[in-house]
Image (cartoon, one colour):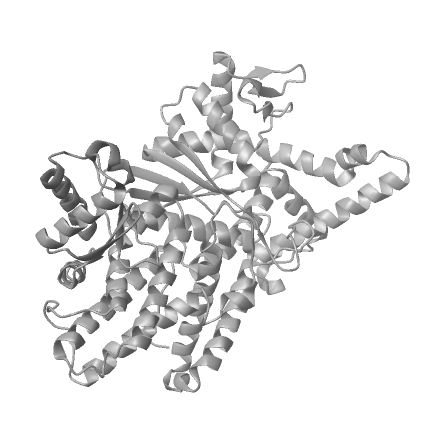
Length: 594
């Protein structure tokens, strides 16, 4: 039973019975909090057809609904707004149906596939705070699309070649002295990130020296010995120089091991990982095809470009004059390969908004090349993440490392939980405590980064993220644990939720909870349509907050009426299960006890 659909259908019947007219789709809105009711029907649009004032129409339809249906128990009319209150029996039937549906919240299969590409790390540095927002967004969007009935393929493209990689390689070659992850005590990705920073420092020192000697700064940046050496290393790599390739393989393998440790700790995985080193040659083939079709053109210096000025996108380089590839070369190849591998109905890239222009160009090129998938490519653009101290910069070594941030957030969550528990954690073993604190720390981090609209630039506040009393992951996790505690105590008393919901009167807060639960499938649909995990985060918070109001207002375990006690246990268990499912869509686990 869907209350909203039943009321919409009943309004159509009411108009037919009262006015002998048919109306189209009936749109119901949530009733504003200052008025009594759950759903509101706006009567203004009917005044011309029904030849009555909005208030009269509302009064007649409301009266008919109360007298002729079992779903509406009362109504009130405010100008042209008919506010409808749902009958307790209808709410209880809805609760029964939801509680009896193990797949509640999951939408029917669509028979369509979607690929979500996210993470996209560079092998010259470890994952940082910005990567975490990317990973959490991509993982959550994948889960939400899966719940919307799509077949989802999660992919990652690793930027494992190019100038930036050669910078770390050259710095290691010059300054490394054979250092390894084992000898340094550093994860492989951290170790190579160190050499990326060292390169930048040495490069800047060379530029300063050249400028002091009278060289123009722009000229110095291009002709500094270290930059010349990096360009030469890139050419050697593309020519397959054995020594260069051996160094590249060794350093990248250290980085991959480091990445894998981080991915495992944050609960993120991929169905397939692509490497730019394996796709850039395909990109070059596509550019050759485009040259023959007249989509691209070659300049006198032998570089290859596309002119997109008629689309407001300027001219774009797709291949350097020395024949080496750029990001666009690689992305052309990767996009083609992904479609060839999976033939997906849609491809989504989760990449920061600094790449908006790049993706506009990529999609425009694919359209001009006549690719069949060109109109189903989408860039999920998101804003950068700052810390209270300001913007992060990889080259200067001021990024906030993902592993460090996870550790710090976990420590902060453990301190907050210890403080709030007041001795309740004494019954936990050390292993259970460690698992709980890890769960809370990751929950705090993921929820904080996902509750904000992806488009918005945001500031991450570690202390605020672990607050057990605000709009945070740990608050919602705590509410779940509280409900599970109530259910366990009921079982100890010999009471458990059994059978169907029985008929009884409901408190307003119980009605609100059932209404909110009934909205879960629609919230999932909306989040899938807009690719917005923030919708699910907000829903989980609303549900947890409303349950706490219910818990504070009404007794559960002290309720003497067995029917009401049974109903409230069923309701509580469904709230806990829905919180678990909602948080699961964000990639967040919830504890059984805290």
